[in-house]
Image (cartoon, rainbow, N blue to C red; front, top):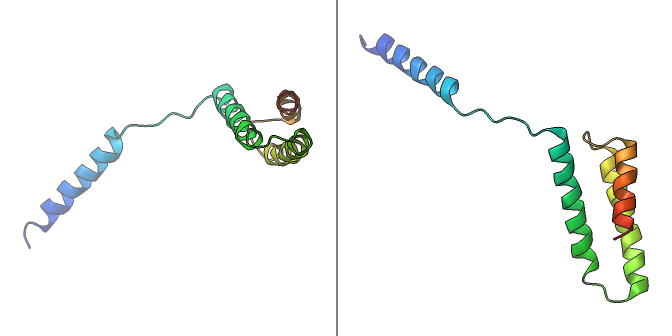
Length: 94
């Protein structure tokens, strides 16, 4: 029982040391995060469309995907309306 205060003090110091010295992650800057998101949408579009050989089906699928992407990006904090429109134009030209 006489070691209880020492054990509590030591454990609290270890806990404090852990949180003090643990590596801190820095958030990514907005342009870097935007580019990562753009790349992800390019890859998704490419992956979905490369399986379709018929041009009419491919065009219909592309329209559906672009509408889906626009709805997703509408609520994304990293993109404003003009950024979404620019990305949709870029993806539409793919």
